Length: 101
Image 1 (cartoon, rainbow, N blue to C red):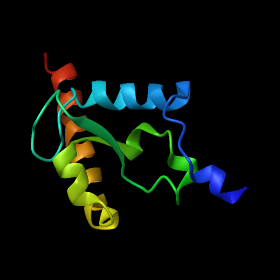
Image 2 (cartoon, rainbow, N blue to C red):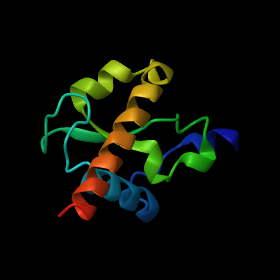
Image 3 (tube, rainbow, N blue to C red):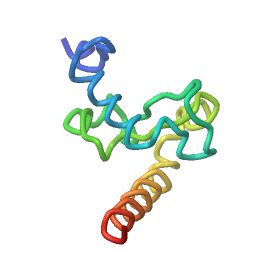
Image 4 (cartoon, rainbow, N blue to C red):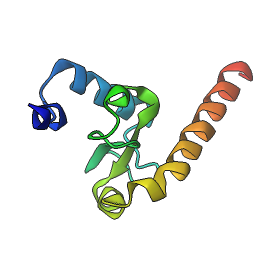
């Protein structure tokens, strides 16, 4: 039973919607190196397996290219502060764009 809660259903509507929102927010661009469109993936900042309540939260996802995503593998906790900082900067930038146009 326990193992099932860790398995992702990549085809579920909930998961696909989460990914779509993350990709659109990040403009299909790797938030580390700036590559866009091709070969990007959605990365859970806090681990899928350990933070069940954060799995579909928008503030727990970030777009990475496959190369950058592989660099974070098994080093997720090292990258958490950077990823949350990048999301915060992106949000501040968008707010400024909205209110200063």
